[in-house]
Length: 278
Image 1 (tube, one colour):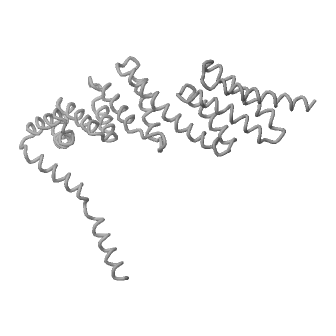
Image 2 (cartoon, rainbow, N blue to C red; image 1 turned 180 degrees about the horizontal axis):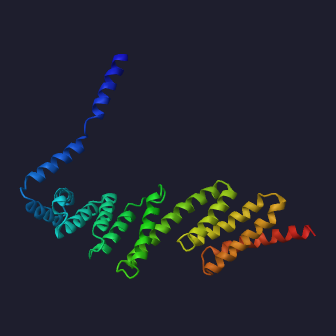
């Protein structure tokens, strides 16, 4: 057994130093593509042909190779833009965003600077994960889009940019809503109250605003039911106040009827305590 373990460790160390099959295959493919073309002009034309045909990885490989040879020329600007765009169209969004940012750094006065700035923001947006995963990339995308819209207030991309911002905010709201709802469903009323209130404050006009206010009515009422006597009046009042917020937000809300019933019960119990305290 000891010999087998030693052999396994040696093999593991050996294979760790070896490039993966995918890496070797990609390097070999890159060499094969490069060797087909002798001059930088041939490679440039081939890269544009690959790009036009939708072979974006092959195009990116050639654009990357020839860019240093054209860096000080007008063609260099176009190559770097197409290089970044090739990554984007190949769904490698972080690499694409990096190279669009590099394009902006190198060519800030370019006629395509606005487009490059927007595309880098779009790449961050497209890299944003589903709501139940870590949302660091979503916050990055939101920040980048807001910077873009402030920098280009009259941009033709304003409408699309605002739509992406709304989508990101709804995703972030959904993440926070799911956490708050989990607290409510497990009877952790204090954590639920804090979470729903923060959600309403941070995303006051999201797709979850009405449901958030409805849950605040329910949570406040049930929280009051479980509370000590000294806290009940305050928490029954919170149920009533949140029902009023829901009504003010949307008097036609599908949640309002149930919210009013709960708030009505909260008012009765609050008044009964007040009468007993006289």
